[in-house]
Image 1 (cartoon, rainbow, N blue to C red):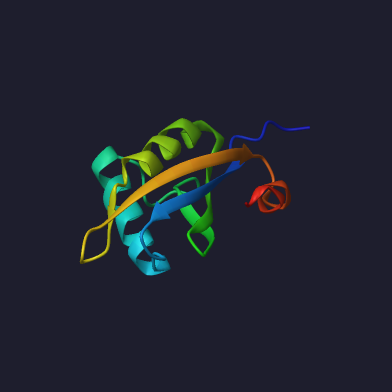
Image 2: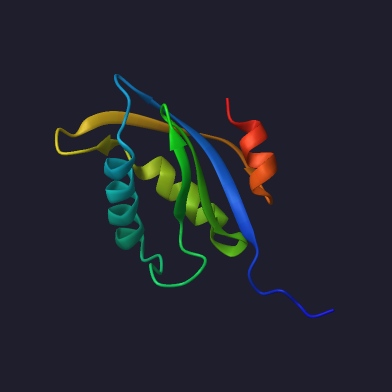
Length: 105
């Protein structure tokens, strides 16, 4: 059996904000922060918003970038053109999307 170089991780998170955040606004902030942190936006392991609804979501990343992806989440403190203040809390990290979805609060 060959060695797999790329393994996915799914980070479950919630957003504490005064109103619901739009998915596209959050994606823009994630892209901005990932770029600032030097995360490769072109490879398969780049952080990717897999699911998001009602200020709860799942971010996919590679197993080697898990800690950086969590740091990226925590670095996002404002979202959208109106700069809505947010606090992102990570709940759990999973190796499968199924377990991650089961962990959504």
